[in-house]
Image 1 (cartoon, rainbow, N blue to C red):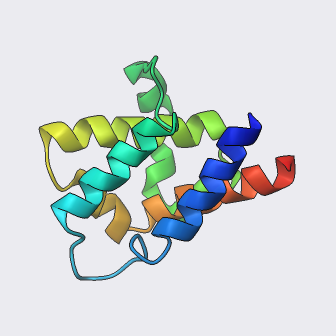
Image 2: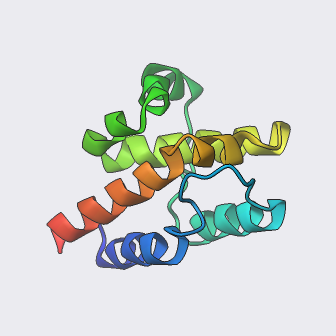
Length: 117
């Protein structure tokens, strides 16, 4: 992982941990849009996305604890798919937030960045 990417993943965790915490209240569309835009701006979404890879790894969103051992690529794959699905069906990202998936991905990003620093 590039040093710049290491810093970004740690920064994302710090910045979004409270917003993405599980809870009943929906996260605003603006907050979700900002989150997706920032992921893209910081190259945390995949430019070359393969839906077959998504289908092969989609089981990771079934339980947040599955993400604890996910690779960087798998985390990016999940976020990229969710961001694309959000455009077609608003509410996907908030549902993943509500289920603890987004926070688990950020925690995994943070863990990966700490082990590489």
